[in-house]
Length: 237
Image 1 (cartoon, rainbow, N blue to C red):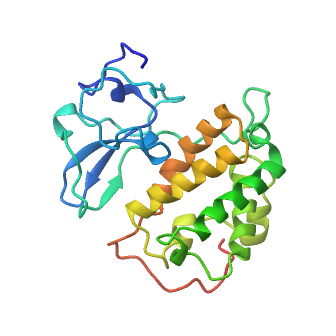
Image 2 (cartoon, rainbow, N blue to C red):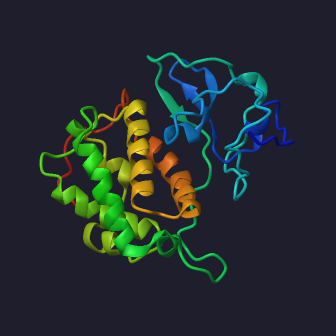
């Protein structure tokens, strides 16, 4: 366990950690959620506050994009299972572009060969998941190819996804499927394991998960009034 001295807004270390995100339930209650719990169950999803020591603490790479809620609005305790949780504060996504003249995240992760390994291992896990498998088509081949192209583009590689399918518009593309907060968490755990099994370097893996976490939770649409009809075309502009 590593001790840190950073304190913010009475939240302890969580007040300045890139993995901490404020969430609000369907009943209006606010909670602080640890994003590391999505990939590592040893971290508490809703930790007791204030947190004064944490081996997973990481300062954000850039300022947060929304204002932090005061500590008085954060409730200490478990979130009821029947409450719909929606992220209202998230860490910034990874920088797909080069780092000050350095390689892109796509290159640091291992390039196209690594992306192919990641997607193959991810879909192997989806095939065996009784909760997530029904959300995917019977034939996974098309999904495999789309995810390869999207992940390469998202990480800073060639924009082959947009060339073929237009604007990603991921949330709109997922409207036909009822996606719960639990499903988003399971998706992230499978992806975290796929990144590890594919041999993605630890620093690139952490940066990818920091961006995938808010992306996955942005797909949650359970209980929301969204169009469920399948898209007329795979291409969206």
